[in-house]
Image (cartoon, rainbow, N blue to C red):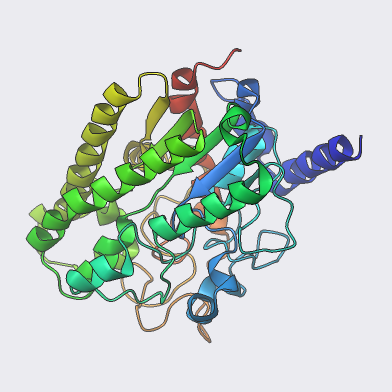
Length: 375
């Protein structure tokens, strides 16, 4: 009874918190609650981290997401979420009828409804592989995908072993988004596009290996998200700004960077399709972050976003895109926009709560039929 009351109170608070939740929850498809998930497990980076990085010594010391204005619209509490408020995984949990996922590094947290293993700044590749590719992890975290999977192994050994597979039937696993930081770090440190492309097979296979490990733990319902159209982000629009008009598409995103994201996503999709042949009884779904973001960009005006600020950071300063790598969000005297809900980009790298809300809605509409939930 106490657990039921806690869950109901959590959902009630979240409905108030989201503000526009009634509009979000009344779109095309039924809620994920119809899938009757009892647990959700998340791997990934800052797109999904709900507080692991801030609990790591070096990672937390180097992460601005651990202090206001991050979290300003999340009960005015900087939880380590790299946004002004909630993330995609938060909205997925809400629509599944579950509390928000607690970070694994929070030793006092309640993990009865799943765990978030994602770490801001992490990579799919190990620290050794990054070094071999001459890439420096500026986030100063070694909590790559393999490390997060080791955390899961330890968690299961203490919570459900030896009956884990039997207890995973109603669990949802999200392996990613992960692998994008390799390219952010590499391109920012002078790697060419061709050098980045050559890294894609290794990164994709690392993710697929991670999916296999998750299946080995007993997972039967798995979402593997791809990457956003990175050529639309202020960080790259600023770094690779050019006067060549043909370098941009109709949305003023950089074509080469978006084509690179498409290349990565296609490789990931192909690998997922191959994996399905080996595991015909496992539900493996590609999470199409790329097209979810494009849909948001194409419909931004009708969704309440400011068409004049679609590629400007809400929290930032300087330049055409309101982004300066040397004066980032959270630094002294870096201003905020008046209303974050009218912006897609929060800090030039991550998105606002409102952007994540609509992307989560698109994703849920896309993946729900593939989950074969009874509705």
